[in-house]
Picture 1 (cartoon, one colour):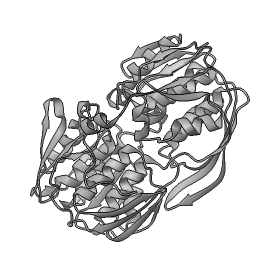
Picture 2 (cartoon, rainbow, N blue to C red):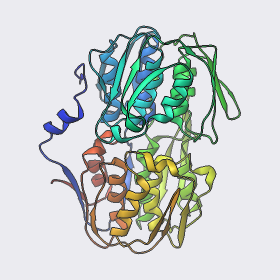
Picture 3 (cartoon, rainbow, N blue to C red):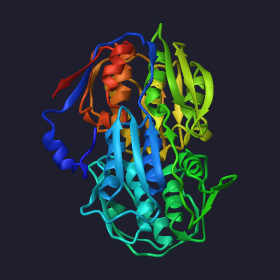
Picture 4 (spheres, rainbow, N blue to C red):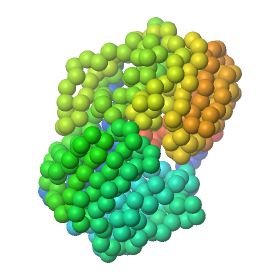
Amino acid sequence: MNLPLFWPSAAIQNDLKAYVMHFKLQPGGTLKGEARVPGDKSISHRAIMLGALAEGTSRVNGFLEGEDALATLAAFRAMGVEIEGPDNGNVTVHGVGLHGLKAPAHPLDLGNAGTGMRLLCGLLAGQPFDSELTGDASLCSRPMGRVIDPLTKMGASIGSAEGGRPPLKIRGGQQLQGIHYDLPMASAQVKSCCLLAGLYSRGRTSVTEPAPTRDHTERMLRGFGYTVDSNGAEIALHGGGRLQACDIEVPADISSATFFLVGASIAPGSDLLLQHVGINPTRIGVINILRLMGADITLQQEREVGGEPVADIRVRYAPLRGIEIPLDQVPLAIDEFPALFIAAACAEGRTVLHGAEELRVKESDRIAAMAEGLSTLGVSNEVLDDGIIIDGGDMGGGVIATYNDHRIAMSFAIAALRASGEITVQDCDHVATSFPGFDTLARRLGLSISAVAG
């Protein structure tokens, strides 16, 4: 499968859709069997980016063929990088070197890919040509000031719509200067943006994070032969180096696996094995939190593949209990909280989450969206500025609004395993951004789910 030079705009994609897809779910069921969920989205983005900037040919196996990662791939094609595939998760990237990108003829449309846009800001800030980044309505409502601010301190020139939102216009030809930046929030995207801009900067660029976040960028830079120093909470590199092509094995995405980890934990009789899942220590907050709640999760055949730790994960049903989620686990599970809210709704007692303001500025306001859906199903909850309180209990059926957020959609699909009535999850087209084929795999494992036209 070869993509066109330009990824279609959000408007064109919407025009091409014959219908809006909804999920209809019958209550109850168990999850059993073995499965490998799609490749890690975060690693897939970075594999294309660094492979494009490397010298030589990089081969990527396990690439996520979801809309977000494909949008990043198309952006680099538009900047002159020859990329073969994807073909069953296999991609070959013919790198052009750090200074070999060409000016795109049109704005780069990232669709719904927040990671793609924020990381590309860092890479494009140091290029000799002008560029523009845009996306769909959801992405263009998300704040980008958190990357614009440090990049501006480094000497970048970036214009934006009101409130620091896309589209972003990046002026080329700026000489960047390395800085030290204390992240105001724990964000792997902001950290990675700064480090990638640092590749094009004079001197040393360093970032200190207030809490550990996913470290895929640092690991992959080292895999491509670039020196990255880590000293406690500080990560640093010097500009002016080179990236050497390498082969990358993308593990299954723990964020995608989370829906089935939660599903098997809450559905009596479930016994599931999820294969080759990435268990990077900066990403396993979901496992730690579920175990604190009483989940029966074991890691098997732990190993390292391409610099990333992986394992097969076995999860069996176990009664869950409400907990106060430790603050140090919040940044390690930030993308997994929608599914964890479903676990909390099925747990005995109260679950309390603080320190998760980041959930307010994802593809949707995930705290508000999940609270609304839980209320629809009859689950008592209280929204906090930085989190939520959920009282576990019985769940009914109902119609759920997803606000075009893929993780909201999949979380409420899994909720049907413990619901007493039919659940309709609206507007599920965006599920394909991170988990193409979710409904097919879920149905094979035991969820009573059908995709219907709306």
